[in-house]
Image (cartoon, rainbow, N blue to C red; front, top):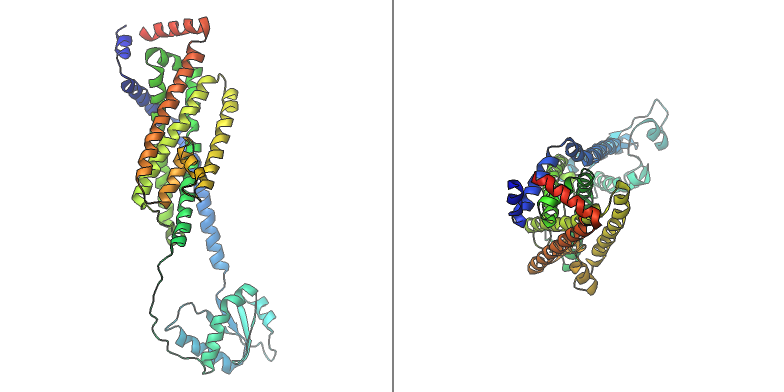
Length: 407
């Protein structure tokens, strides 16, 4: 009886902390969580290897050598002009003079068939003829034309220094670039939430089948059970994100310049990343509270899948709503997406990439926190009425469980 009296004296936050600590340790140190962490890494590793191998194959198959099949005098003039050009210019291809086999001159087509060249240059210095694939001809025609002109004495051998005057990007260009960052942030937020929110549902269904949830509900308030489970799963999600982020950072570091640069958001990267974490937490709590309510109402795994499908589809629709509305900030549609609880994290993260104002995010986070509290309270109340107090039998079960918990 002493343990029951002590539990009954716990405040809502203290009881939620007890549940959160218990669930966090149980999930974090389980073998299932380890394999769950490995799941998303396999596509990333395979994709990185495939991209690296494909890039290497493409680089190896991309030929940069141009064959010279003109006269010996013209070939020598082109090679000499190339030596002069490479002192002041970059991107000049390699040239190789092709000698005739005996007394028979090879055609350009035969040279390409027998050897690995990008294009074959025939004709003379006044009118070079390039034979080869269209892509390679378009790639090297400028360099060949320049070297032919230099070899013929009609092009300068020294080039003046160029003064650079870069233009500042326009407002339209900045807005277009920031939309790309907003889209990337929304997509990453959506994928993480859909990947990690399912853990809340599976954990509650498992504990409900084992009668653990009834023991917890008899010992502490149901609001504290829901709140503790949500924050435990949120903590586990942050551990998973940290592990995946470390692997992703290692891959980006190895990729180097191959990774495209993302345009800087309007609020800057540090504040944008901080708001991304906050909006992920709020979005996860909102979606997780709905999944907790569904898990509490369902009695079998099949019912869980049936009931969770509408929520998943609704989440996909609100993601599309937020993605569409971000192209027209300030319109009624964008304001609705920012105010609707399930789409608010996506819409506000997109606004963080496009607008430098901070106060709308403070208002949105407060509003989302209020919605989380309402969802948790509604889910816990519904669980008590439908599961823990479902008639005479339900009251008997609760009394029995309460006695067991007291013991």
